Image 1 (tube, rainbow, N blue to C red):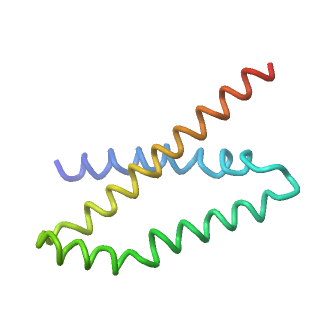
Image 2 (tube, rainbow, N blue to C red; image 1 turned 90 degrees about the vertical axis):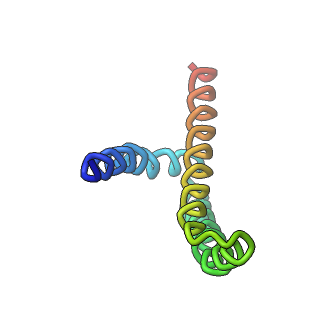
Image 3 (cartoon, rainbow, N blue to C red; image 1 turned 60 degrees about the vertical axis):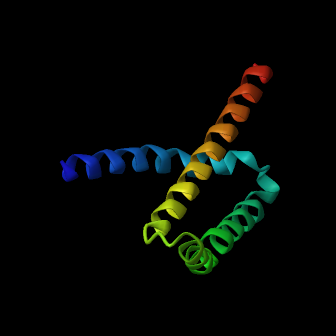
Length: 99
């Protein structure tokens, strides 16, 4: 059962990860693409990765729940998925307007 769950999670991750670099590169104009992607990546890593131990420790202290790190990862995944869906929807609607 666990193997099926892990395989399903891997398939979802692959479906998400294979489209993201192309979509992210199309968000920015060519002349600022590298800067835009690097700033976005740096902010994301700083906010969600750099402060993760402090945030999770505070959540554990407040709630007393030892599973708080998994909730934090789940929240980050949901935010990432929603952001991906919004950007894809905007990109699609813009492409349809231009056609």
